[in-house]
Image (cartoon, rainbow, N blue to C red; front, side, top):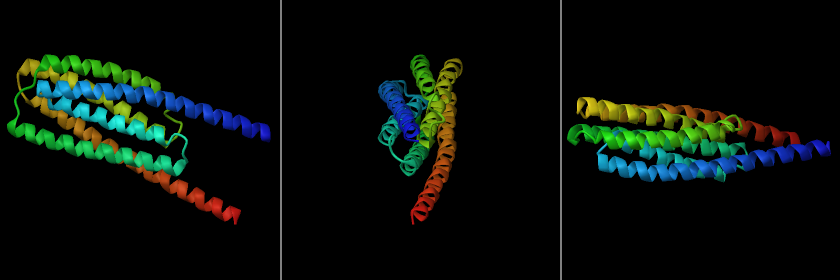
Amino acid sequence: MAGCCSEDDVHLQAMRDGQRRVLWIVLALNAVMFVGEFTAGWIANSTALLADSLDMLGDTLVYALSLAVVAQGPRAKALSAGFKGAVMLIFGLAVGAQVIVKLLYGLPPQAPLMAVVGTLALAGNIVCLILLTRHREDDVNMSSVWVCSRNDLFANSGVIAAAALVALTHSIWPDLLIGAAIAALFLRSSFHVIGDARSAYHESRIDNQTGVRGRG
């Protein structure tokens, strides 16, 4: 029995170490991509790029929080996932508000800059998703992180598509529509992640109460 426990402890520690390494890498990548995309979005006057950059900032915060709870129990990980869902919800609402402002006062963005930066961001997020997929099923903490990374691919692809359509039409609408779609994706994912977090938190409370009764 002691040997089995020792093997389980070693396996658990190895899994946590692997999670930490991956989270540090994707955190650094997303922080760099946020700075690059936000700057380019501001220069290019692109709602889609700015929305995607906010996604990168949100992911950076999410990965930092995930690192903090890697070695914590199910309840802490459920709370972490719930916070990530709340971050997605806030950014979704913020991007939606930016779309409305741009609709009223905006000008067509610079399509070439959008396309280049969107392509670089897509390449970076593909690397992040590949790294995170290995840990997708570890726990609710890593599962919610994987959802964030997967959403990034859709957002990046949308930015590239918007750049192509802006170049063809010289219209503001492709940029606005993609920005709105990214906002909708944030909102939909936030409800999914928050729901999973609530379920995991509820299960952790039941397990904790059962353990207390068992000891009693």
